[in-house]
Image (cartoon, rainbow, N blue to C red):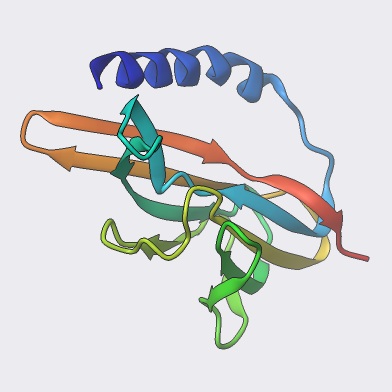
Length: 160
């Protein structure tokens, strides 16, 4: 377990400088895929050939990085490993003011997403703005053991 945690933390730290250097072009909206790592396989295989699984909670964070303009979140959908929509977190569009943030949470006990769970977020703006930072924070804290890391979102379909 310690080796897995150390490897994940080192990978996350090494990825930070590269992610910080990327400059995103202005956009009027996007559809963004965000991985959720709520099930992490680790350890040795059991007698049925299955690894042990660690369940994590996941918080989807959406941060408007534009200092002057709002954005509108039209949809936040949570999918399982097979690509089935499990939950639509939005019942109505949500407006985030300039530099504002919001989050959506999947509990540690929620096993429905599986190892390939993900969010798809659709957002738009009235004019081209700095794209928001959209990522999940995946975490497990129990006693003296803990693990936490982020998973960045990736645009998969620009909004017209």
